[in-house]
Image (cartoon, rainbow over all chains, first blue to last red; front, top):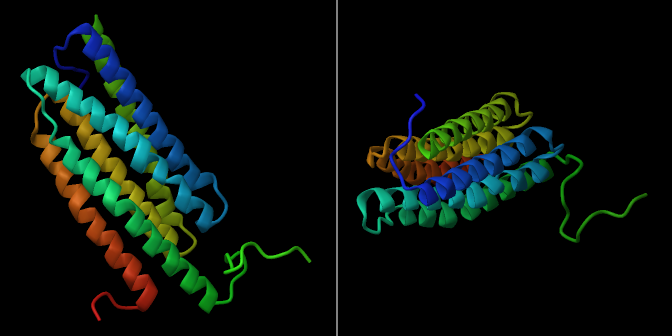
Length: 120
Length: 93
């Protein structure tokens, strides 16, 4: 399964760094999903992969296909547009649903309307 | 030589993305509450989309791009529907 397209040296180096960096950022975000203690902290972790990791891999893909077909190929912008538009919407909806559920069950660690609660 | 290095870099990044998918699947299966599971599912499909894009770079075919586009479009609908279900108890009112 180890193979790669025939690319000029500069393109291969740039694409390699972009792909490795993007996937490493995504892995860091997914590790945060495991390590962080509460749901409200975990919501933030995954956006690392949804923004920086996604952008790096999409730029690498654009560069790869543009060099391979010797013309600008930018249809990956569609994916970038969709993900950038939809990720905030879904995560805000999910966080609001979580706040609603936690408040209705009167659980602790729920963020209040007026910032963090004072320590007693 | 650079082709081999690029192949190794792409394979290593696929392994990293696979580990990220494993983390997301762990959170989806073990999440203490329902919203954790939905968050894990969201991360899982986003990472799967990135993995498909690296397959597209590896083989040089645009077939994988279309699959990634479909995942980016339809995964959004799934997460919104699940978030709405958690909020209201029903999806379409």
